[in-house]
Structures are given as structure tokens and as C-alpha cells.
Amino acid sequence: MKITKVTKEYYEVDGEKIYFFEPLEKVISIKDLQKILNASKEIVNKLKGK
View (cartoon, rainbow, N blue to C red):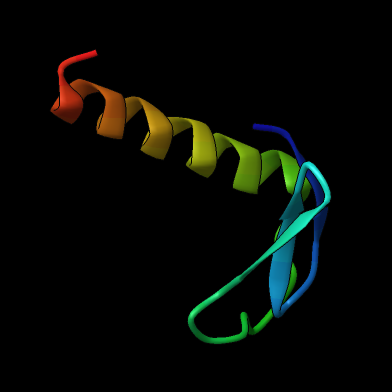
């Protein structure tokens, strides 16, 4: 999954908007959010045994 846009309310992955539970106080960079998403995906895969 590659993040293409980040706002205070949502981020966009492959044309799909994914909204935050609460709006952010400031917009974080795409690079930082991509690192968070990749780390989360890796943890989920480990828990699933992949």
C-alpha cells in the first residue's frame, strides 16, 4: 500500500480515503505516515503467522 495524500482528516491509499478516528492537530508527512503503515502491516502479518 502506498500513501498518496495526507490531510488532517484522512489519508489516501490507492485512491481510497481512510479517515482518522479524530482529526490530527497538524498534517504529518507522507513519508512518516508510510513508515507507520508499513510497521503496522508487518506487525499484523507476524501476528497472523505470515
